[in-house]
Image (tube, rainbow, N blue to C red; front, side, top):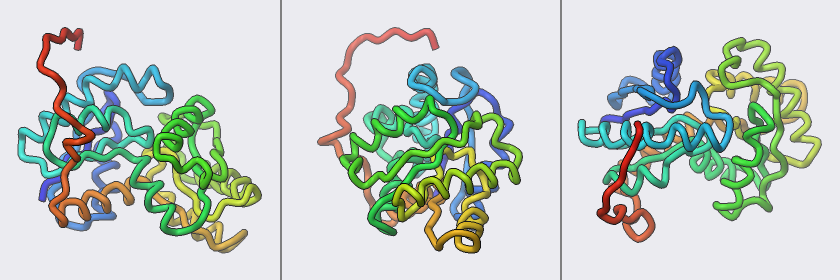
Length: 240
């Protein structure tokens, strides 16, 4: 099996870290390929960023499928361009949100998302509404740290712990990391919560997404053509 990971930003500076993170969940198999975007935003932290990144994300997904990928993971919690990509390829395509939330809903009654900035709160709230699970979302907590500044592991863990404690106070049962750039902190946060506050699951969106891909592949599942129909044949112009 070959999994292609699309990093929906223009820099390749995270590619190796993301490949290492994926290997921590997948082991030596399956084959992993990682690519970033030839054009688009430096990070996705708004609806506008999502729109700007969309064409390149879809193009990378199509390239991966034509090069023999069995599935594509668009590594962003906002699921950018995921529905569009599913219309154009015959392999599983997932982002970070749907798999992470589906996992959380199997671990407790109510979940909270701990994310980066206030800018992305409406995006996450909209995704929850689309899935019909807003009544099971206890809260969306913000650590006020841009995606490109998540590299300080200790500072990130401290911020996540404070936000997670707020989520517990608001009645959450499960924590979901609301950015796939929060690399390598889920287990440490879970351990710290258990030691200092309460035992509570912490869902890493990368692990949840890759796990879902493996499950879909093992069951031979692909996107439904009742939902993700190929786009009508017509002329389209692009500046990308």
